[in-house]
Length: 270
Ligand SMILES: Nc1ncnc2c1ncn2[C@@H]1O[C@H](COP(=O)(O)OP(=O)(O)OP(=O)(O)O)[C@@H](O)[C@H]1O
Image (cartoon, rainbow, N blue to C red; front, side, top):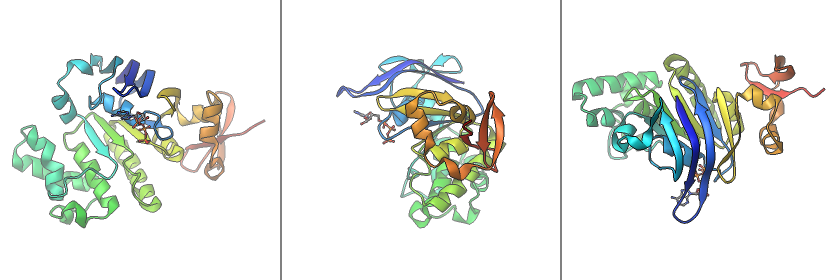
């Protein structure tokens, strides 16, 4: 479990990126941080692995304040997948996936064998192992990024707009792959996106952030649609609602429209 307690981040130039955030991120589920540009999503995510340190408050992993942990060790135990995959361009796919386990002292043989298995896991053909990142499509590069994030078998996987740079069709494929993977692996995934549809598709818990780095609402997609916390949330989740509608289900006494995959798409007004 990851817990933010009264977390604020003010950068040295005075920018208040995150303010007074209290949130619990449950284990073995996907929590999606969603909000418009500059709402503090990435800053919040990076405080989990100490790429950013809070100016006030605490971030706890399983009850331990991350401020007491060595940042390098902490980062090597947490998977991190970013937009544009972040692959090392001069290293082959297989080397990119095996890098962190090798740094952690895993034998070469074991690290490379596991890296090949991870290519299978993310749906990539092993024949791509000896290519360089520039010889892959954008979607393939993102899959390698996910394989690399999984390479240390982390309990926690941080994903910062991982599918933001690929076309909509590939993006939809990658989203489905992540759902499949998460069904098998059950990691604690924290995922950042601008896209409310992506948030509702992937998130068990969706955290809606507003400008100034405050949380407007943190709840399941169905709960958010059934009872938006305020006008900002109602407006933010309202766009595009129609296309997800298929059938009705009861959530807390309100009729929620759910799509064919069981994902909520809207609330029936009386
Ligand atoms: N190193 C920094 N120094 C000063 N301000 C920063 C720094 N990093 C981020 N910020 C500011 O903090 C705020 C939150 O940024 P952050 O990247 O967390 O937002 P975001 O919601 O992830 O945005 P985006 O969706 O555009 O990536 C923004 O106003 C940003 O300009």
